[in-house]
Image 1 (cartoon, rainbow, N blue to C red):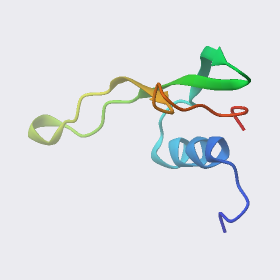
Image 2: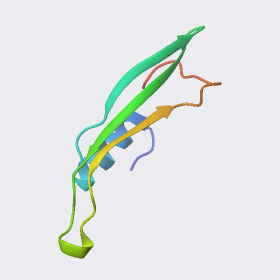
Image 3: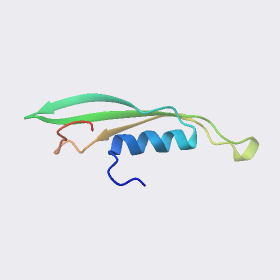
Length: 73
């Protein structure tokens, strides 16, 4: 499985599995060698008629503003 894979790799794999675009990463801030990232994923619309689910852009900020990562990996 998924043991040893980075969160970035797992998110990319999940997006491929469900037919979404690959995630895009942007560094939004850096403090004392700690980084925060903005992650955007473009979802495709699915279904037809009453079962149709709207697609669109989803954006996440990781981690919380008070914490940070050493790198995106």
